[in-house]
Structure formats: structure tokens, C-alpha cells
Length: 500
Ligand code: BES
Ligand code: MN
Ligand code: ZN
Image 1 (cartoon, rainbow, N blue to C red):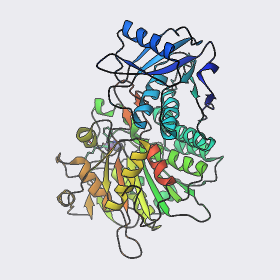
Image 2: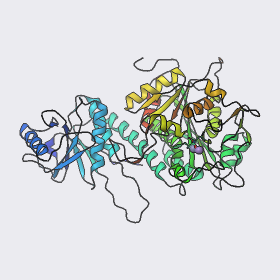
Image 3: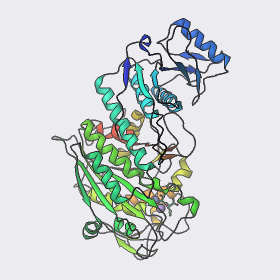
Image 4: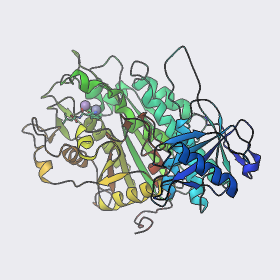
């Protein structure tokens, strides 16, 4: 995914006659206020009058198109609502994103929102680019409505290239997740990621179904064996000369989750192409980390399989052996994510990294608990604090969740080390899934648990309602920027995250 380079204008006098200028509109008890410091007082006053005349109040996630007033030689103005609260960098990112999402033609948008510092200016650029994403439809009638992005004022070259790279990573996730499951299976997922990794310094290793079985990846093998599309484990490695620390990333890559023999009902199956989002996020994060020269060494495991029912599929009551030797009794083949992740976590643990982070659309329970905007965050104190700091920096939403020990006990099996579910149990589904994964996180040389964070992204992976902020309807790419911030941060093993 290559994003066209954003353009920068020294002042608003440099707008072209066919540009659209994006100006903020803040809600206020005494009437809407124009939010831009690039405008003359007279132009500002005319725009405020126009806003009042059309009843534009300035609420978030709204835009109003008005003609360019006298004194502004543009094609038109997009007024974008900013809400009532004093805007933060996160507000500006969202507002710029919504403006970019709202345009229906491939016009140039010149963002002239007020900002107080470089961070806010960069947030505007990032939001504008994120909002310029357009879903690639499978259609004969291709219409491109992607706007071109321009800003008044220019952030540093370093920050522009960092922001563009981050946005490209988000777009990569959105594109991969959008791809229909008849066009994306474990084998073609690997091919796509190989293409993306080709021009980077990443090294790539791929285990096919024979190697997976031979090397003891029993979880990925068990989930993948019901499908005509065989499973894969893709390993990406970023190895700087003198790494600050070693981070292992593990992503759930179920390219379609039918439930397997524990088949999902029809309505629950719709949307299950999204079940590879964790792997897409981890792949895109790793590629961006390589492009940006992350100081950390990174090893990424993409656990890829298609969960299908058939004569060769795993059955409830099968006992399988995960990488490393622990056994699992499968009691529900629809709890397949934790099986493939168990293999990934064990392989990651064997490297004794300083930190393991996993991302998975693991449970419907995460959606019920947290809705569609927050990722559920579980794991060790040290690791989850680092994720929270990174999420705050990226302006993304994560929420800490407990791992209650009694939800591990319910997974005890009569015939294996652990069962993948307790049949019929509905309480704390996100947390018991987290407890299952915890069993497969190893210890370091000192016998201490390896710092580990688990992100259940079943909620924020996709947005089922309309566009808001910089987030489109459909696949969002959420959590990608958080993880890029994490792997780019200078945190060394044992150090406290920023602000702690
Ligand atoms: N991929 C699903 C989780 C999911 C559900 C993601 C809805 C996004 C939207 C996962 O593999 C699954 O099926 N989980 C089961 C677990 C259950 C069998 C214990 C679930 O959540 O119902
Ligand atoms: Mn499932
Ligand atoms: Zn699943």
C-alpha cells in the first residue's frame, strides 16, 4: 500500500482554485466558532455567518459544505464539527479524519485547522491520511473517491515519513481484512505479506502443513486440517545490529472461522473473514517497524488457518498436543483461536524474549463486555502498562481486564492438561480465553514468567456502524499504531514505560 505523499502549503494564500479548505467548527453556547488560525478575521466572520445560516452547530462527526467566502479563493469550504470540549491532539486526529472521510470526489483537501504545537499538527496530518482511506470494492465499476491531502504548514520530514508509514500499515490491515475469504486463505495471506516484506530488511520463514505437523505445532494443525486450504505459520524477523530489547508478536490469523464441526449459526458466521485481523495487525506492525528502523529486535508469529467442518476436521473430545508438549482437550472447535495462539505463544516463549504481545479476535464476549471501540487488555502488570502507554501515545483505546484464577480452574480437563472451553459456561468468556493463553506463556532463564500482554481485538477490529472520526465502516486497522509505538519506543528490558 503506497499512500500519495501529502502536500504542504506555506499559507492559505497558496490554495488552488479547485481546492476544498477544511476548517473546524467548535460548538459553543453563543453559537458556533470558527477554528482555524490561517484565516483573516473577515473570512472567519463570513464563515461563522454561513454556519449560523445553515444551522451548523459544530457537533463531532458532522461536516457542512459551504461556498468559499470572499477573500478565500478556493472551490469551497468543508466545515467539520469539533464538539464543545477544548480540542486535544486526539480530537484533531478524529476531526481531520472525519473531514477526509466525508468527501465523495477525488479532490484536494487543504487542512487549515488551528493547532498549538507540533504534536497537534502531526495529529491533523495523521487523521487526514487515515480518513482518506477508501475501501477497495470487488467491482467492475471502479470509482476512486480518494482525496489528496494537503496541510497549511509543514511538519518535520522525519515526522511526515513516520506518519505516512504508520498510516500505510493501518491501510494494509484494512485491505487484508476486507479481502473476502474466497480470495484470502492461509497460503495467499503468506503471499500477500511476502510481497509487502520484499522491500524491507525483514527475514521471512514459512512453515507449511507438513513442517507444522513435523515440528509439533498441534494447535495450528488441528484447526487447519478441516479445510482444503492448508494452514501456515509465517515468522517475520527484524534484527537490528544492537537491539534495545527483543519483542515477540503473535497474531491470530483465521482467514475464515465457520466454527468447524461446532458450526456457527448463519448470522454469527457473517463477518468471520475478520478473524485474521490479529495476524494482519502483527504483520503490518512488523513491516512498519522494519521500515522505521525499530531499535527492538522483533520476532513475529502469524498463526494462519481456515476453520472449516469436514471429514478431516478436528472433533469435540479430540486431544491435541501443542508446540512444547502441553495437551488440550478440544470441547468446542469454535474456540479455535486459542489453539493456534497456544502454538504461537509457545514458539515465542522458547526464544526467551523480553516481552510477548499477542493480538486476536478471540471472543464474542470481548464485544459484549467492551463494545466495538475498546480492545480488552490482559496479561502481566509490566507488559500491560507498556501497552497502555503506547495506546495513549497513539490515541487508541484499550481497557485493562483481570485474569481471575477461578476462570482457569473451569478449564481443567479429565484427559488432558487443559480443555479449550467449559461447555455451556457463559461467564467471563474474554477472561477465561485469556487464562487459557496464559498457560502457554513460558518462563525466562530466571524462572520468571515472561512479560506478556494479550489484546482481544474482537470489538475494535471492525466498525459495524457508520464512519466516525478517522474510522471507516468495516475493518479499522485499530491497535496497529499502538503496537508500532510500542516497538519504536526506547523501552529497555525492566525499564518503566513513559509516564510511570
Ligand atoms: N472468532 C471468534 C470470536 C469472535 C466472535 C470474533 C464474534 C468477532 C466476533 C472465536 O473464534 C469464537 O468463535 N469464539 C467463541 C468462543 C466460545 C466457543 C467459547 C465465541 O466467542 O463464541
Ligand atoms: Mn471460533
Ligand atoms: Zn475465531
